Length: 371
Image (cartoon, rainbow, N blue to C red; front, side):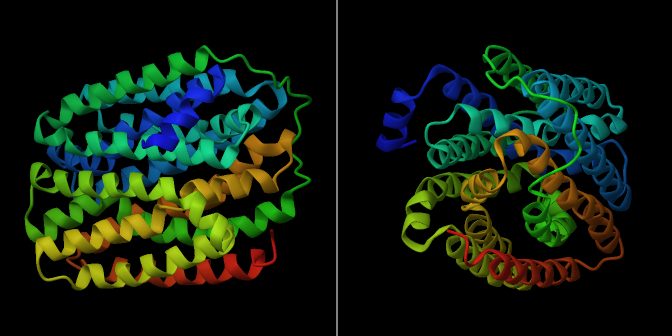
């Protein structure tokens, strides 16, 4: 976490710490799921196309739950619906552990993402720092999650993830919510800004083509097992965790918009190079660097979004952006999985690079004058 991170943690209020902890422990799940879920489904007898289709269904259901829960949360209080969303994920993990692959369809922490982000914005004295700290701790924990397949069977990692969601639920249950909500309202005064931010949905479609099934790509291209791929994911997440801590400083120097744009450009170049790598070790190095540059500004982007949306619309505004991002993103794994099934392991990366480029240019044009 570093000295500054530790200092920030000490002076935080109780509810800030609980929320950051509740959001951060999910890093263990994110670190393991990207690697574990496709390969666990393969062990259950599903082919690449069906795996992609199932992950597509998971993302679609999660994104629709997100907007429903967030709208209800803005109206009646965000805490209770954050707890409900995690309870549903617990049921999904249990079904998955019992070897029912369709349990994956209701495993979606995204359905509470807008709610917890709005809760943290409500409680934070410094939202940029809190977001950065949350992302960094989460990413450090994702290193541990990425290493789990080296020591634990895939099925038991699913069971462990169930208990992690239970811990997150317990932490949120201890928070005292100040926001009382109002009336049920589907309108957004910030609709114009939300629609501009939703241009990022092109990133969602591109990311969906490869990222949820990237472990499958390593397996198909280099014949590597989960245990062999695991350290690469761990190293990638560890470097990302460190770089995330520096993103607020970079943002202060360049500004939020330029910081996001410049790091994305480097990430896009590396993405084009990744499928051209002819060895596992070179591909791994490019994968680590691409992950760092493409994602290190995640907390800056989240803070940017929350500051553009009024206080009483934050949960559903952020969730609407997630929904518009997730609909195209959710179709990505099916398309990417089908292309892999046909033996085309390169084309999804090039399509993703084009979509990322269009999205990055659009983001800059829309928000270059926002201070």
